[in-house]
Image 1 (cartoon, one colour):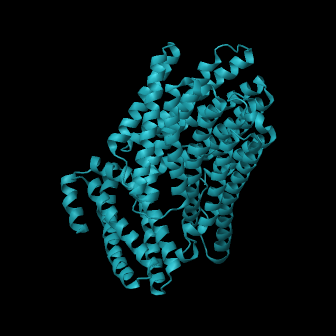
Image 2: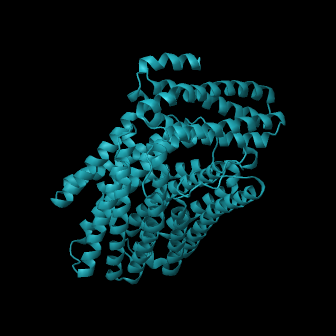
Image 3: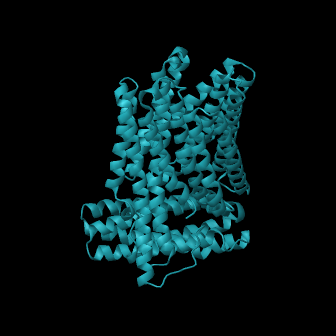
Length: 143
Length: 425
């Protein structure tokens, strides 16, 4: 197992939840939307937090690069959190059209964000960090 | 937004290509070597395709590879107009039958692409993990340089009046341009953007490595065959290129069928149409290798060109533009630090119906172009439809930017926003 594989699998899990939420919102099944969205919030928060608390600082220390990719990733994390809040508001107002457009925006943002992480940042972490030390920490935070 | 200048200029070359077809009428389809057809071909390749690809590379490289392209605002300010002007001069050279203009245009391309390719290849130099895509972009840019080199040799031959043995030079120019530059880049970029746009499974690593390796070996074989007059090498290389192109098309259609994002948006439909055309092109190419007399028929040879340019490359490029531009608009509004509630979502930047309308016009233009091969009275309507389709593309792209600017100005009036966003960001 590598950091890349572990986090790609978690990205996929979040993608599946976003897609399911969108389909359910289209069917106006708000109870299930609420349920899956809560789960998505939890998973996404775990993911963003482990990156910001563990992976990014370790990468910055090992590479010596503090204002590079991690800065962009943190900025995009903020945008994702904003979108999650907006989704909650749309859910509260049962505004399906706004909800679907918002989740489409979140999917679009996350796909390009994930691509950068999966092709640049995570492989660099696998190369620069002691994977055996970090893997259990990341697994623990994501579980 | 560095690539914007490239993206917004590009559709006008498509409009010009359509208008040129209206002007020349059925004469354009009299032969694959007719001057209006050569002008139209180069408007689509050195005009539309080259503009968008250069702009998209400046956008794509930082996303996938993590390294910024140095001097990208300068490339946009100086190289973009140089390339656009060179494409216009080249078109003028073909339309007027002036070898002098062809040489001037070739010099512009040598300078512009020389600088662009040099800067991008340098940006790709640092070692990073996305090595496969680095190699694809490098090889594709080198192929573009080789294509332009052969093009310059052709222009120089015509200028000197040495018309003998131009056909082999044209063939090698064509293969490096279509397979080495355009197809390799299209395929390499697809490996990243198709799973990203449509949430399909990833392309298998063995396929990606195999595609790049076989492409390079095949291009080497074709070039050796050309240099040593060894037709078996050329035929072997061409067959390999056609087979891997067909495999890529089949694999993409299969992956798209297994996508997790079950929406049929315009980008998906543009890509699907392009893959069907790529598959048809590869099968027609294999047929032409078995029966070489087919390529002497203007309808077959021009039909192959239409499949490649209008069917495959421009379709994929338009599909990608419809994803890139709304995303850029959204991203830059968000970078202004405006609250999310104030920023329109990505889908709000450009309505799906507007994109779908343009897709329909694109398909009608393609059908009319094909029909024009056998029904000459349809050539002018086909040109007109092509011009209308690209005008609508331009309208759609400009409307994203107008939407972006209107929101930005509204935000500036109502919310204190960041003013330190540079155009290069």
